[in-house]
Length: 396
Image (cartoon, rainbow, N blue to C red; front, side, top):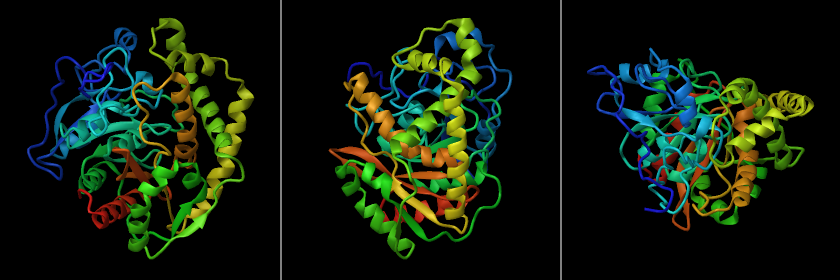
């Protein structure tokens, strides 16, 4: 086992019990939930022992967790998260960094690291995560599983811990495309089905990807093109992806401090690498930086809605790189964060649904292929992802 990896994506200790329905649309399947979802009678650690120490044990269970149990899925435990869901590597020095079963010498991705890990290892059929800046999509890509960030607000976040509320979404992972879709039929509101098209290849995202990643995803590009009758190339940005990342970073930082700053200041918690630094930056964030980000988001969202409103689908690599190696330096991890969030911010800024398909490998490590649609088209997007996976010969 590589240094710093304890192997398990599940939280240590006794697993919380949860009654499930004897039948239903998810009967026979198992599920897990990231440890920022409340389960009655079980501590919600949010990935940090000081958070667990200073918060009461929840008396009730988050609705998203209950919805899966009521649909017949059997709960098998809580999964690890990066501290306060604030990071993309998947590292947790307090509870142990989960193994990436698909690439054991690499990070599993975060912040929903444990959920991706238990699905990739086959220990759960479904796992709830959360996605603010890529925290479902990136672990899905790194661990070689399916993942969805749904439309913002589509799935209830009641009974969960928040980071940046205007970006936070309740997503999930699955090892099979059909299971990802069936989970959506339980969690998503009614509507949003129907045909999608045309297909739009986002030039900036493909140019941002490492050449090996772009090459590995060429068969997926061809498969989705054959399913949808070809493809058009588009440019989404008048600015660089570095500028997009900066706008996202500033808004996320301001919201993270507004959400958690009082607790950080009062509890003075110990943090693992990088997390404390991000909160210190958030605390010192100049208000005008986040205000500029919000102005940018308003204009960018209007542009996206105009482009996608008729049913168009954006396609691009979920991550520009495979998972970083476990020995990556702090500087290498920061670089990976910057080049990645410049692309994951597309769906985040637009409140869009995005599905990552495990469509390729680079040096033996998985890389994901993303489909993105207009808000509310989640069910249609999941159906399209299943068709693409079938065309690629992937698990459906």
